[in-house]
Structure formats: C-alpha cells, structure tokens
Image 1: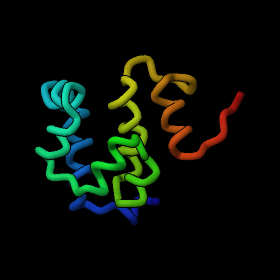
Image 2: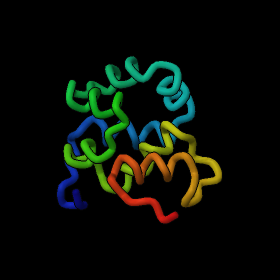
Image 3: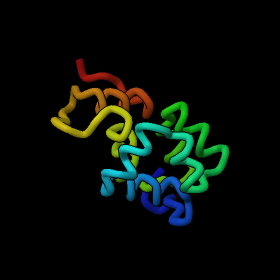
Length: 101
C-alpha cells in the first residue's frame, strides 16, 4: 500500500478528492452514502469497504495513501484533528496500528 500502488482510475480516489473539497458533495455523502457511491460508480468491492469503513481494504484496492486518513475524517469529522481524535482512532483501528496509550 504505497504510492506506487495507487490506482488513478479507481472511483474512490476521485470521490475522496471531491468530497474533501466540495461541501455540498460532502453533505450529500453524509446524508446518503449509498447515493454518493452510486454517483461515483464505485464497484461492489469498493462499496463494501466504504460501508465497513475498511480503510485498509481501500488502500489495497489502490486508494492513494494520502487519502486513507482523509477517509476516517469523512466519517468522524475533520476539525481539531489530533492523535486522539475520533478520526485518528478510527484510522489507527482500521489500519491495525497499536494505540500509544
């Protein structure tokens, strides 16, 4: 799961890119993830990973490494991010990163 494994054609990459920059698209995603996934033509495998918030699986499919923590922010919010934020904990959990407690 490195930069060389990025699949530039993977619809999830475009979806993350646009959701993080377009408030209306982000709000639509928060309201109806299924409709957003359909609008971006995600594969069934991608949809399953999004439903499960399976960030590691999305990385294995070719989501850009920069976007992986962004995914956790789409689900858990992006304000006041810090190592113990809900988004950071979700990312660590889904990526199998041990807690630093």
